[in-house]
Image (cartoon, rainbow, N blue to C red; front, side):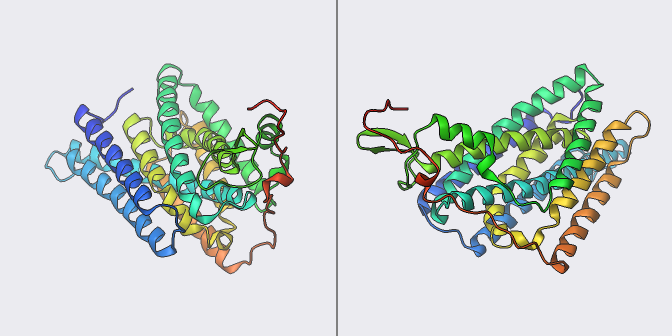
Length: 342
């Protein structure tokens, strides 16, 4: 599969990701457990978005966007638009991620000061999953072109399903993963700081925070399955696919705290995401009949997302909320002394 990624570009990108994650972990450990303010979240969100556009600017320049070679300029312009389109789509899908994270934190009554570390683990899990699935997806598309039709049909189905599910009250009590964890794992009735394991009557049990991390890992898998086909509809270049995904994910933690307080104001955004996914699915299904230009995809995505956000501000949201299962002991088995440790 052809790619613009040279060893230098891959190396610089990998170095940037490692440094960015190291700085994020350093800041997390230095600050300790604390509630993230809107100001702090806003600053970090702007920083990640700015870094993303600095990267695409550097990539455009590196590919010859400012040179005299007309072919090089065309390639640079095309790849820059592909990156921005993919980044915007993945960022929009990440907003849905944020809303699910918020639902989990609310349901389990996770204290605000503990949420940062959980989200950081979620970001790392998402990065690893995306990298693995992108490599597998790129290999499959290179070997079997008809895989694109499967991706397209899946995205179209997902878009329709998301449209019908939008606005409905979530029901975590009936979630199969959560029900399985409750049956198989001994869970403490309360949090123990940021620990994932604690002891009750000498028995080692998992804390509710560990259950939240496990569920966020499952959410990462589900959203990776949705988002990876979406980006392959824009470009099959592994370098653009991976970099746009990674830059969208790196700002996920900051974006959560930025949107957590205003998520209900954008209650129609799920409808916009459903339309975008359906459009991308159709784009993949007709790829051998008519190839929709990337600029059209970018324009459609921007218009739909802005429209649904503006409509969300004008139309009042439905009055329902996710109930909390806290204290966790009301929903989970209490460990007994004569029971084997899990």
